[in-house]
Length: 325
Image 1 (cartoon, rainbow, N blue to C red):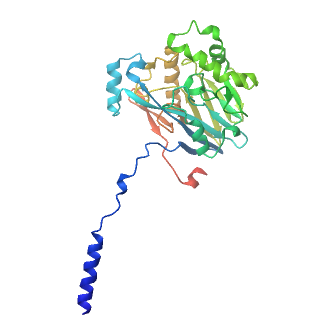
Image 2 (cartoon, helix red, strand yellow):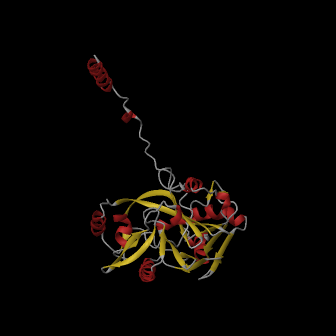
């Protein structure tokens, strides 16, 4: 009798297991990324990489001092098509006494489908724009200074904006527009709009050469890409991190071939000279670098590779004790 009951119970269980299960695969896809940030420590300074999103650009058409065919071949080795989705990175530094933003992304300049994610990333990282007291602009191009303002209002209302004097003299003087290359002329109008509310509030501070702007935050001129392109140098606890700005645009091409330039350069030859010097110095001295257009979060090391160089991304960590070292 007990055996028969057991058989009936087993049969009932098997019948129940055959019942249809809810089909969760029919749920709609999300098709968006979470706001992007990545945290690390440099000495006692907290550094947060912030994603402003991406922009897709035709590198085979934009890269210069090379050929389109060669660029397509180089990109193919990295499993990339010529239309490359390129990161737009900014970086937030909490020194303990200052909250410093390096570059501001593109804001709304590239439209709804490219860039414009910086404010979301700042909030996701646990900060707010009104806490930032210094904005360091590596150079005045739309994808670096385009997030300064929105509809004529400051996006960082309590910040001073620091920019190299030569970039300010060039881009914020409309008289230079007529003599600029055709592809650069729109940049003058964009710069005027983005900087206007800060200029009206006497919040734009210029510098020249190498100087310490804030405790532990230095400037290093890297003129070429623009007349005042600047690398910012962060030093804390015997460690160093350099914010490269637009030292390069195409990591899968220019690390191996630093002589390759881009259509956006004001002085292509000068930009190539600066790039090679920066690569050599980073590889020799071993400090960290952070770049605007290296795949997010864009922080890592450089090492020699053959006749060129290669990129070593900073290894990911989620361990709080590692962050606290």
